[in-house]
Length: 219
Image (cartoon, rainbow, N blue to C red; front, top):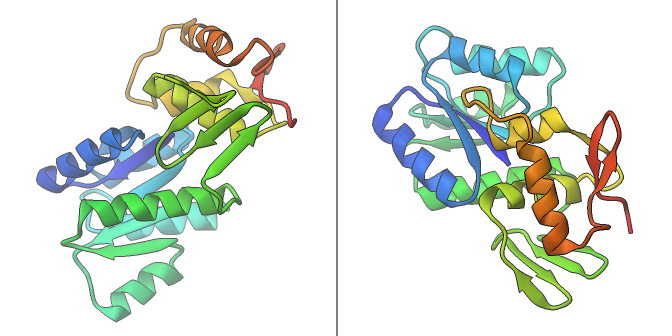
């Protein structure tokens, strides 16, 4: 579950980075509009947390470019412009949600969870696949009523595959969710995680689609 954070204030950005990572998200943090545009062009993100007042290129221009290009990625706008008129303009420009500074980290996390659920077309917070039950908010995975402990990266892969059941996920897409555009990744990393997940959740849980990637079939 990789998020792009676009925020030029180091204090706010570092606080959001710590909170989002502790909540289980993988994160790329960029500090200007041009870097955000490059990241969005090269990496698949679950959502964007976007400040409007950015150097180089404004958050409004980034948001407008996404929507005019047909990209419906969820965008949570964070801004010091907190009047009703400002919020209306932000929502009309294509923002999915809007928070004025200062804000509480807990509210940012709650709104991120809501946007992710909405974008995936599901309101429930529990996913059941055969004998496997996943509680999304707590990131708890049970198999035959017994808890299975996953690493953060294993959880990210499980969540991506279970929320796209029946739709093969390319290796590159999974790598983007795990590492993003700023990080290097070893060529066999996904294979290692998939192998470990099969040991923990069953050999039939993840199927390899040759030449494409991996899929969890609909039960």
